Length: 83
Image (tube, rainbow, N blue to C red; front, side, top):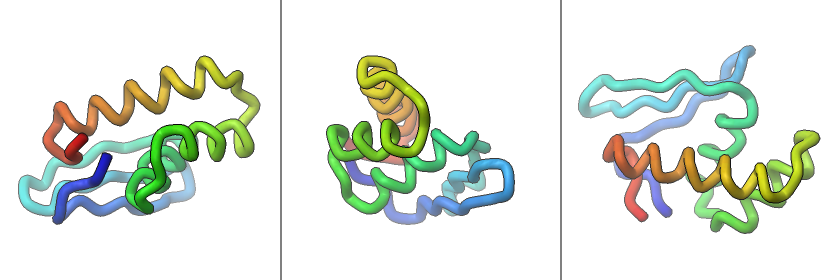
């Protein structure tokens, strides 16, 4: 998956924000969501993002896989990313 051009990810004290610079649409994310989107923006694949999420947070692999997939598809549905 790849974030579209014009999509930026910014870390805040409480997580992060994903901004679509073209439409002005933004999402506020918690810390784990920010980690997922930032890792995807770096070009990591889903398995690597899941590994990073597990290393950073106390989460089981099955839950991490489901959460990464759900957030990735939400980004695609919002036209912020391409599969």
